[in-house]
Image 1 (cartoon, one colour):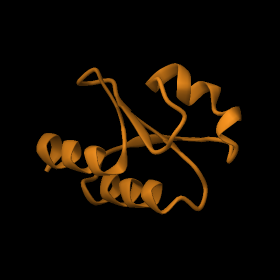
Image 2: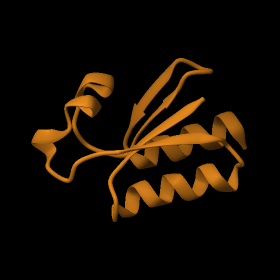
Image 3: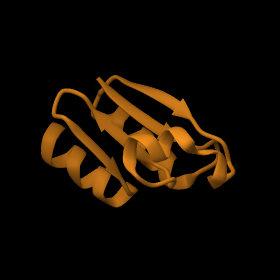
Length: 78
């Protein structure tokens, strides 16, 4: 199972979500607050408050930064 922490209107989050869909990867979206100071759950799971962040339970991976996430998805699922 893949979980995507994302923010409504975030172009980086949308890019990751689009790639997950293109690769036919089922994922759960967790929508986060626009204020960085209110992103405690993101901080807890990833150590930082920025989005997007994915958690891939099948591979034990937690990863921030859209560029790194896209590379990971290509290497792992494409």
